[in-house]
Every structure is written in structure tokens, then in C-alpha cells.
Length: 339
Image 1 (cartoon, rainbow, N blue to C red):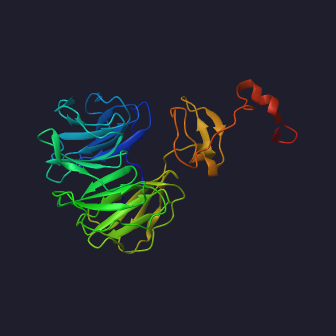
Image 2: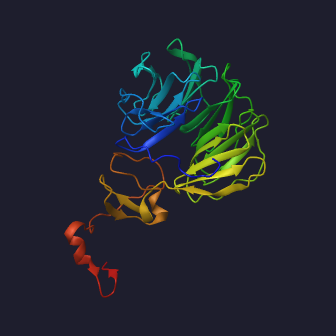
């Protein structure tokens, strides 16, 4: 945090995109969840894997979370289940928690480790008893679209949720009742929410490319939107002392912000790769197809068999050429491509 420089080489074991990364509370371990359906445990000091790959999910692992004791972890997946694991044995400790009817997008433990909260594309939040393998209270309805992120306050009394319906909601974790009116202001899907360590503030990141800071008790914005990212903000987090906020975006940068003033701290942290110049890459990293930036965010990959919604981009591939045929389209003298 002091220098913004990487402290190890990139950790490379997963066979697909890494969707979620979390430190243990004591900072000694890291867990990662991936679209390859697996979870990996790492030594934070040596950057070496600490156990065998955790397998069991049959879909993308979208979210992972450590219990406060650092022994147990929870994971949420596209297979609509939440699983609990023992990091010492690499084994599941109970039957998968089921009930969501669509992908589980976010999981988090309560500060005392007794509960797990999950958010889902089915638009609900569920609270589970981590000791009894069952739902602790009924699903929390209210959002009208996917719940992308859930977070506990430090005292465990409240849960925040961010949704594709453009709202943030704050709930009483014991009763399941909303404690303030929905927080509105973002102009896009809300993809990440995080409480400050003292529970008085809430940070949010959105597809509108902004980070926003809220009074968690009143439900009002406390500063102007924090702008600087040129892409969707997928993740936000407070520093342990609450003085700074970190945000990660698909513009391939991480930015640090002063939580009191809203000013950016230092230069953006770079190093992550993306689609170079908006190229779509093949499984071996080869460049396949270039898409103009204004269309890239609406383009759906070959894994999607059905797209419902607005703004999706469909490509006319009737004149698409690749491989040796590409040479027939290039005109060296004009340094251009034939149409």
C-alpha cells in the first residue's frame, strides 16, 4: 500500500479467469475462486499454494470468503450453491447450502463467524447459520434485479447489498428488515459494496465508472462521486484504518482514494492485463478479433447460449476472415484493410 509496487510475481495456477480473491484476517493466507470451478489456498508471504485444489463446484466460483478464524472458507458458485471448506484438510465440512434459484454472486461471513450471507442473480439475499447447515432467516426480498455484492458491518448488526437494479439496501441482519430507504444515485449496475471499519460509511462501485461514499446510518451520499476510472468498477474495499478506499476496474487499474476528501491518492496501480487495444484473445492468448470500445462491453462470449436484455451486440460474421485468408484483405501500399 505504501509504494503501490507488486511484492511477488503473479500467482498463476488457475486455468481460467480469477473471479474473487480474499486475505485471511491475520494476513497469512489468500484464497482465490475461479471460472475453472476451483478454489486455491495460498501462503501470502511465499506466494506458494498451501493445499490441494478445492474441487466440488460444478460452475464458476464467483465469490470466496474467509471465516474470522481463518480455518473455514465459504464459496458461492454459478451452480447455485454455497459450500464451506476446512482449509487445513481441504475438505467440505457440510452439505452444500442450496435455495438460491440462480447463480450465487457474493458470499461473506459475519464478524463472529456464525452466519453466512449470500447474494444471487435471483434477486435475493439469504442469511445462513454457518453451524447448522440451514437458512437462519427467510430470504430478504426487495431488489428487482441481480444482487451482485453483499457485505457485513464490523459489528455484525447490518448487511449491505448492491444490485443491478441500481440500488443499495441496508438490512438488519437479525430481523431481515431494511433499516434505511434504498440508496440511489448510481447510473449503472452496482457491483461492489463495502462498510468502513467503524460501520458509519459505505463505499460502492458501479458500471457507471464511479465510486460513491454513503452515510450508512442516514442513507445519503457524503461526497461527490469519485471519478477517474474509465471502465466498470467491479470491486471496492476500505483500508483497515478506514482512511483510504481501493477500487478495481476493468480499465485494468486499481485506484486509491482518501475516504475523508474523496481525492485520489497517488498514481493508479497498473500491471493487470486486459484485452489489448480491445482485442478478443483465444485460449492461448492469440489475438482473434478487434471490437471497437463502444461495443466491447455489450459483446457476449461463446459460452452464452441465450442473451436477454437490451444493448447486446450481435456480430455479422458473413465476411469474417482469419488465418491465411487475412492476407487477402490487407493492402500494404495503402497500409489499410480492404472492406
